Image (cartoon, rainbow over all chains, first blue to last red; front, top):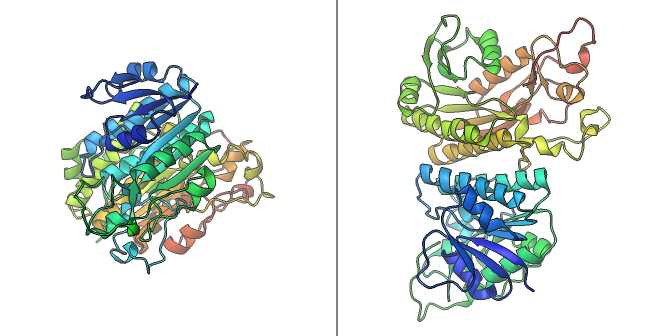
Length: 256
Length: 256
């Protein structure tokens, strides 16, 4: 019998990559923000993470939560990220603790550290630049979305310290299917392939840890995020590297 | 002519220590949450930091902001700190940037790192324990109030990176007048005397820096917060030490 896991933000791009890759590995409960086009092959709810009653229902009987829900826009207005991302994470975590959930896997973001790039770009996107972030640095969010993701990480730290729940904050890079972003150095530096995304989340659901911050990208030559902690704490073994793709036969995909 | 400074939370305990100590050094604009008992000897406003129009008025013509306002209760409910402390700080900082303010001094708190104490107390309150926090560590808030203070620090980091405003986040310890807390090791470890509090804020208003996180305590033998950064970046020269007080003639004061 598979472990019961709640996935919030199941209809988003990261949720899709996870369900494509490890959909058969867990007994999923799915939370969608709006009714999905196709009927999901799992128990599901439609609604907001800010809805405490709904979150109590969604967390019932669950062992782990993968929390992706929230306003995903880089330029999301403050009022939206304050409510959906910051407050929503608190409401969900309360419900999870009340339900006895043992593990919280949180979709943080590269935007939590976006302003490290400001003085260093484009050099840090290049292979001859040694600058690396490893997750021990104090965040420098690049926008209000990033501020909200740092707040979500901080809430995770608090719920871990206060309630003992295992927490892994994954600073997700630039997720695209099939191939890395084209003619976009930053996107190639922080590319996360769909299969590496699914594998990383599986490791976050399986590994033993207390509290972790890891970077969620493929093993790109151009990377300026260290993968050491993801490898060491989670056993992450990325298969992809944006440098292994030539420019041919590519189609553009939206940035994460 | 003195520099024009906006002080939010002017009616609180930290605000009182600042005005007592350096009230003559600046051209203050004061923000009170409710009408003060005595008519202030400076321009003042009464209202909420979440009131954008009021904040625009309060920031007009100001060079620096000392931001103390917010729900100060250690056990403040989430909804209150979300609104008053997190959202309020964002509203104030927006107004400050629009008004051309050059410096933001923010009252963060020991509660931003409260959960570092959990596994180490009471040893870390004692002089034979070498554990020290220095402000480079990732926060571990001990309550929702602490979560909100970390979010306020993060907003300061963002406004500095985005707008170039100088920001100093001061993690204020345990402010009491006259003498340190009695029979309370933690309070003695993180005591901040009134005169050290006023002097530290003056240094935060005078020193040249870009972005700083410092601990705001007196030079207590029992301290587990490093004062190195406050000394180096701000020129802080604390005069007090909780170890220099005997137990006689003391009266209890509420904890900060």
